[in-house]
Length: 321
Image 1 (cartoon, rainbow, N blue to C red):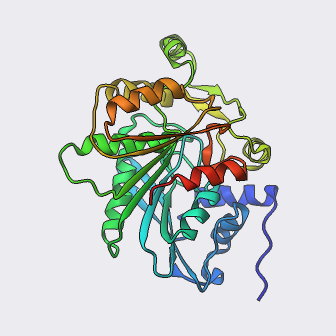
Image 2 (image 1 turned 45 degrees about the horizontal axis):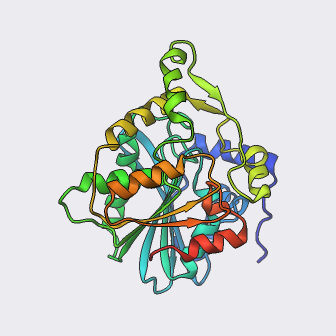
């Protein structure tokens, strides 16, 4: 039987709006695309995410996580997976943008679990906003609680940008408790954004008058097609940056700065990153995480999982699995 065609932008914009309004079309473990709802199947095809097959089992569902009423998760299970990778995406992102990383992890024998952060993708919440970064911790912990009910596999963390910050905070909060992670990979992790020490001074001045700022789609990868897709072809992209998110990040930076942790982390960073203040951040991470391994990828921008094919290959080769 032939597969349904991939929807075009206008068609998928309507599908995405419907998926965000209606209850999530949960899918128990399946190896057949025909068992997906039409809308979920369309979403996987639009973002070119792996479809279920005889070699790949797929599941999806929704959780409640703290104040987030609907946290959408996805699970890809290859036969005889040796480990389980949990992918935590960045700010403004969602699972649909991570096909390259998902495929790379599957090719290396990993089961892959992704979820849309609160206010992102198909999860509920004000778009691209958060009152407190602790809500992201609640989301991660809800997914880890779900995973704990599945057959046990070594657990690998992979976080891009804000996703890396979420994993860092999770590790620091463990203290002396045993870590659930066998390895943690941080791709261009967020700490201080470029120019933050001066721009943060504007927050108290703007907050009484504005709730959001217009979002500027800046080039964050050498893959120009990815930049065009973000700005013009992805209906799940927010067009504004809420000041509430910036205030929450400012509080998170202040609280996270003095923490230290002995957990081993694998940090991968591009030297053409104009989103985070990467040189200052790397110096901070070296002090904060005494067992950190840091690899600099020459020529790579901020969105490492969507760099050019050659740079992605360098990034993925550095993953510790």
